[in-house]
Amino acid sequence: MLYYELKAQIARGDIAPLYRIDGEDKYWSELAYKDLLALSSELDTEVLSDDRSVEDAIFGVQNFPMMSDRKIVVIRDRKLKDADVKLLEKYLQEPSPTGVIVVYNCEGKIKGERDFTFDVLPENELIPYVVRLTEEMGGSITQGAAKKLVNYTEQSMTRIKNELLKLTAMGEITEQTVQSFVEPSYSYKIYDFTDQIARGSYKGAYEVLSSLARNASEYSPFFTRLTDHIRLMLHTKLAKNVPDAELAKALGVSPYPLTKAKRSAANYTSKQLLTILMNMYRLEQDYKSGNIGVENAMDLAIAEAIEARRK
Image 1 (cartoon, rainbow, N blue to C red):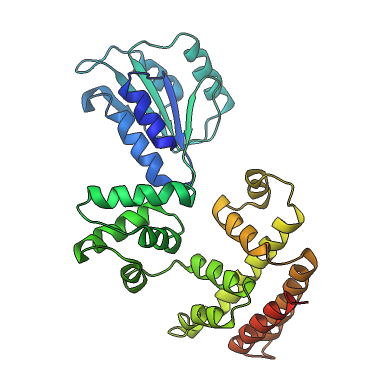
Image 2 (tube, rainbow, N blue to C red):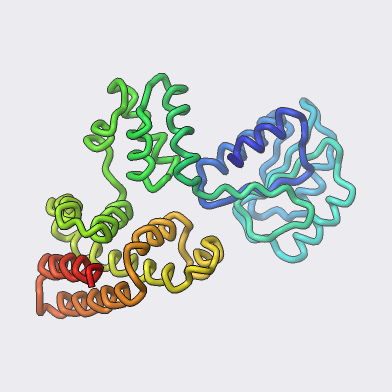
């Protein structure tokens, strides 16, 4: 796990003069950021304000620390200009032996930086961490419950930790506990729904839809998001030889929904997915023009999608 690589480097004193910390999963990047700040005291840590230049950061980090072994200067939440990158690269040729620059959540790559980009962890890495974290919080959770929590929250560690704060007070966390007290994310409902259809399960698909029945206004956005996800399934099928990371970047999506789409798409041929997508477009147009209710459109979408996989 990337975060523990950083922890191990810090523990053995392998400290770089400049770190880049960013990534899609802010839980891990924030942990890494705090660990780097902990290398110094508050008096020897400086977070550059928006109106101050990168030159100020270099000047600051070259000052000898007063209360600790290292001087830390943070550049965060900005787009680095080409001139800024050149200044930092020049500094790295002869960095201060007591200084650490932390570039946090910034655009612009720097030659010589030590890069830690924290993207969403895959399920097989996240589940054991959730089990361990629950134990550290004084609770216990089954493997099945950890997996369900990871899926319900779309692998968001920020939300997982918040849910665990609530669930650990209820005793051992089981799959039933998660199912009863954790609301599945909207996107998870889309993934679960398409997965049930891909398996040919009318019952499973309608169980997902039953969660929308409490609020009929959710049908329309759900239908639109469903169409988008089926289109993503088709893209994964057509571009099966393109690496996932490359395809996700090209399509402008994160790796997690791409993985989910690819898994569901495995149950269809490209032709079947194209048929389903064309039917979705037609049904969406029908309900938006008032020719059919959105609930009826959803019923037809389920039937046509399940029948398409049998042809």
